[in-house]
Amino acid sequence: MNLLGIGSRINHTEFGLGVVTNVTSKHYWVTFIENGLETIDIDSEFEVIESVEDEVDTISFFEVESTLRTILKQWSDISEIIPIADKWKGGKLILEPKDTNLASKEIEIDSFFHKIVMVRDRIRVMEQKINSSKLDNQDKVNLQQYITRIYGSLTTFNVLFKIKEHQFTGEKSK
Image (cartoon, rainbow, N blue to C red; front, side, top):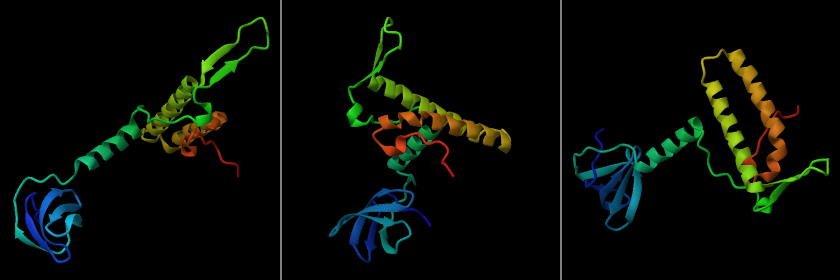
């Protein structure tokens, strides 16, 4: 099957006469005279009135961008923006020593939260690198158990996350 190029004219049984204005790996974007812009499957039934032979990218910019974003998210230590729970925004974390002669320490909670998110993201990257490594399966399982325990130790900080899916999860009780 030859792909139609942009500018090809077709007659579709449902939408009528139209011109191909974009092509993706699965769809033609066609501007129809009476029905406006519609996307139709590449393998749809229609009559080709005039075929424009052209170099056609079979993937859209959106698909490239989405794929690249997924790859970067999975394989780099670039982190997405994770929101802090609204009740903690602008707050402070105050550490007070037992010895009253010593000074307390105040940390902006947003800064502390950012560091927790960075730790979480780096653990995830380490987990992915372990899973894709040439280690034997038993070594991978052993290392994965350590990572699961690390996540479990960090669940204390889940109260800071606005969205539950961003939180740490450790071993589930059986």
